[in-house]
Image (cartoon, rainbow, N blue to C red):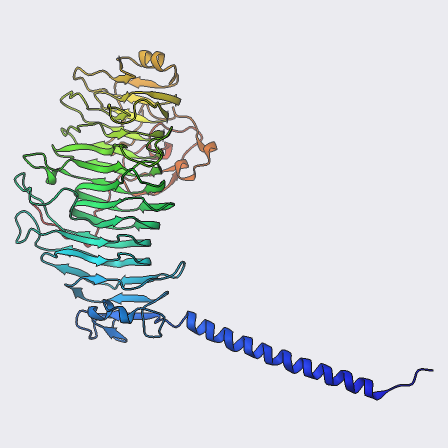
Amino acid sequence: MRVFNPSIIIGISKISFTNIHRLILAALVVLVLSGLAARGASAQASDVYITPDGGGNGVCTNNVHPPSWFNNSANWGSGSSQIGAGTIVHLCGTFTNAFTAQGNGSSGNPVTILWESGAKLSAPAFLGAWFILDGRSNLVLDGGTDGVIEDTANGTNLGSHVQSDAIRADNATNIEVKNLHIQNLYVHQGVSDTMMAVGSLNCFLANHPSGTFSIHDNVMHDMNWCLKIGQYTNPGVTLNIYNNEIFNIDHAMAIFGDTTDQPYTLNFHDNWVHDFANWDTSVNLYHHDGIHIYAGDGVRTFYNNKFSGSMGVNNTSYVFEEIMQGGSKGSNPGGSQVWYNNVWIQASNNNVSNALAYITGNAVFYNNTFVCNDTNGGDNQGGLRYNFGTLYYNSIPRHLTFENNVMSGCVTFFEGINTIFDSLNYNVYVAATSGGQHKWSYNTTSLDTIAAWQSATGKDGSGLYNPTSGLNSLGMPQSGSPVLTVGVNLSTLGITPLNSDTSAGHTKTPIARSSSWNAGAFGSGSSTAATPPTPPAGLTAIVQ
């Protein structure tokens, strides 16, 4: 018979209690260390308030500092009173000085600079850059409801003529700029003013970007080159440019680079780019472009954009690609691109030197509307010029898909050299302008009838030509227009924004396309006249 021994229980109890104590102690240590780590991770100030004089102003009444405090590197870091990851810096009042970021946010937890209502960076003429983000990462500039960066007296007939930029972000990583009014950095008036350098006076200037740059929901007007971003020496850069209105400019956006470029991604959508004529000069100093790309090997997507207004006399094109530079030219120089649901509306009696769009690189065009108003029959007038010229790698054919597009009122609808059509069909060509030019040009062959075009290309069998367009001033089809329900349904492509359109100018109110698609940017639900877009609020402009 087994004899019960109490000492065994006692021994086991001693061991168990000792282990339990150790476990509890270890758990407490872990909790303490975790608490310290969490405290360290969230130690930065949650909100910092900046006013012009460091005193109370508007909602900036607590923890208030002057701009010099923001510009001091000692006030950036992980301390409980410092600017760091997750901090919101509130701006209140009118500032006349530059801001220079002295530190960084973190991925998913940026530093945000927020313009409170009525806040602005404003001076008669500011020499240099208003906001400097050079070498910084994970920063957001948020204009809030009506934030402004402006010069008030810098321009041809104004008191000053200085180089003024809004935001500079050289060698920066993961930058977002949104909800700002950037205006009147230089108000150019009159053809005799050649004082400012080409490519200067920028809304946003960035060399050697890294990561993702997002510029969206801004109104920007009266400067030379608004968005100037280039030198893609860092791999994997993504540019997201959307929901902006840009006007009274020489260039809306320039993407530039050199032979060391790495591939990059550009998403440009839902922007309205218009009016360039105020930058004309008598010596043709500034060559106006809506988009000017001369950095190769990008993957670019453009949709729901509107290009309109007068291009003046010293123009090149609403969209001008000269892919002469790039890293891996190979069999795909200039990269690849997709264009859909874009609208070009050429101003009446305003000839564009190189067609509404001048494209190089492999491309896809779906459901775009080109409305020309050519009047003089010039050699280069037209809707689309594709891979034209002797400098743009003409030894390598380009591949183009062109479906469901509308081209109206052009001297020459399409001009293509070294073009291989992967797909060409369901396009509508309407209301050609007389002027001695041919309606189509394909690999140096001039063509004057839709039948000749179809024969030369061996494609576009469902394409048609009509002498009248039935489009209103915004490029939208009216009742009886030949573009109605002649397109092919492209919903199987899986490009979600392509399946909707807009019914009001550049304002993007999605309307699902019906099963029978129209050619062009507007679907069957858009066949009535649209109300012109409401001008943006909160702007100031100097009228000539």
